[in-house]
Length: 469
Image (cartoon, rainbow, N blue to C red; front, side, top):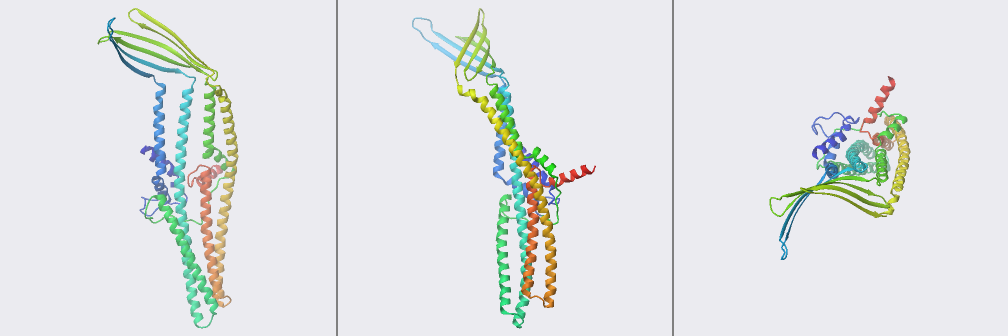
């Protein structure tokens, strides 16, 4: 089970090695915590995932043990019958027998049933890989929340230092009677509000760090080596490729395809329920009154079982030899009329269930196509939003530098300069927010297409190279 657990963990976490937001990391924590480390630790720390893997291992063991259904069923019987009589000789009969029964043919129902069970196990394994991927993604998302919180907090701390410096100069000017007391009071309120904002951001950051440590299963958060790249522009596939990938790789569609196969198998089993099954039976017995037992007998037979809503039963034939002189043959028939008339609707019910699954698949396929197209366009829009936020930040920086020049020329007040500095800080935070929103949208699209982190850009690059050739 441990080997299976770590094997699937490796398959789940391997895509994080090519995440465009991460660098090649050496040994864990030698230079800080990377995205790959966070994903691996979160998967290993999840008790729910370990329990599910243990349950899957048990189910696979039970399925493997089910091969016993194809093998002969052997039973051993031993009995002694002692009888004391006043008018006849006493008897001390001893009997030992070995009985064997082997399924010869059942119309393929057993094989279909085991194939369906195996497909269920394969789907359960796929669901566990998806669960591990969800846990890893949640840890990486919590990591990004911490990075975003720290970046915004750093921006606000740099901003309040600038505001405090302006407040210090304004206080000196107020002492010289160069500014109005109301302007000084307004500046103090501005600095106080900035300090409150920093306190709020610190509390939010602390909560984000606590959530990350909880997901990683640690008590102290190591240094974080990743950074939010506000300059990164993702490579996206075209809409046609995204729709094609979604149709072939989407997890929900794969589950529905499995459900369709299962319904088809159930329909086959229901359609073949009337097909008789053949069983071979055999018996070998030793008997006598004293040890060693001196008499033996054997028999071999064929049993035909049939079942339908209106008639069920079996026919058994056998023949044998009771040495040295006796031979025997037997035919036995059992018939039960109308054992389960309601089962006559099982085939129609199976057909209806299959039709429902096909309808669900078609509906979900349309939804997935729409979601894939929307995901590509959303990533493009968010990338454009990031670019606009970057341009707005550059303009705001120029505006702030111009405000400093105007202050030196006496065209604006120091309060207006402080407001310009706050506007610049808001633009910086908006750029961080736009970059994080783009990363989240890109990951959502990758999840829709059942791709690992960063595989979307790699796929788009591969497609571009193929198109150039």
